[in-house]
Image (cartoon, rainbow, N blue to C red; front, side, top):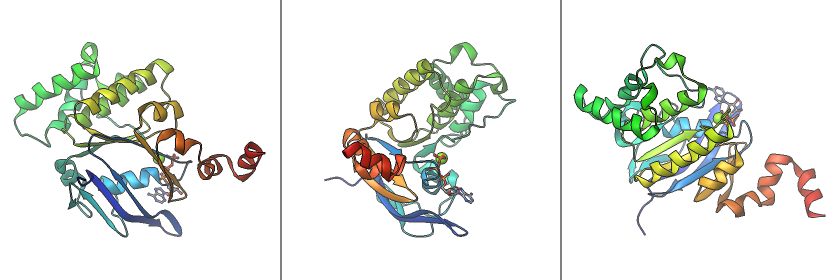
Amino acid sequence: MSAPLLKIDGISKRFGGNQAVKETSFHVDSGEILGLIGPNGAGKTTAFNMIAGYLESDTGDIQLNEKSIKGKKPWDICKAGIARTFQLSKPFGDLSVLENIMVGGFVRSADRRIIETKAREVVVFLGMEAIIDQDALNLTAFDRRKLELGRALATEPKLLLMDEVVAGATPNEASEMVELVKNIRDRGVSILIVEHVMHVIMNLSDRVIVLDSGNLIADGNPEEVVNDPEVMKAYFGEKYVQQQST
Ligand SMILES: Nc1ncnc2c1ncn2[C@@H]1O[C@H](COP(=O)(O)OP(=O)(O)OP(=O)(O)O)[C@@H](O)[C@H]1O
Ligand SMILES: [Mg+2]
């Protein structure tokens, strides 16, 4: 069996007295869409921040293609092939859609023409041609999310980390995002996706893992995981699980 694309081995993060992530291990296979779920405060974004180099893990190791990336800075991790979207999107408001996406391209090239050509391809892929020259400041919340995704794609990642990309989206927008994510995977990008909207996770994920209070409590196919009593307990509490089983 070939090694996983991303291997997380016993990572942890403590903030003062709060152990946000506890010796957690999981992996993402090449070509896989892995869903990461868990209640608010479970440690999902903290795990993302450790993988992407915004926080250094207190323990363990993180390997991309069998090479450790632990302790590396976000720029170097991005160069190594991991891109991420932020739970709160923050585009450069005074740059246009095209320019915002071009920002990602500088990870791969210093040639502005090459970067612009590639950024234009990303704009078409995202269906944002009509607003390509608009300032990011004037975009709808959903277009800002797409823009952020575009900036990540422009870095030509092997692995894309997506944090709550359909939060606040309409049903139509959520469906559009699901299709986009599938198309991104079909282009050979592996995806680790955090999402609270359950039908999006169920529709997209090949496999789902669950964090609860910093512990990994489940890992399996989506149906298995959502029906797991441990997972229901984490979301709804012990009482709910007892009622369901009587
Ligand atoms: N920079 C920080 N400093 C201190 N505590 C933090 C920091 N970031 C996160 N935490 C704490 O760590 C825990 C995990 O937070 P995290 O944001 O990773 O959860 P999450 O699973 O992403 O939640 P949500 O679904 O609400 O986005 C929480 O208790 C949070 O308050
Ligand atoms: Mg979060």
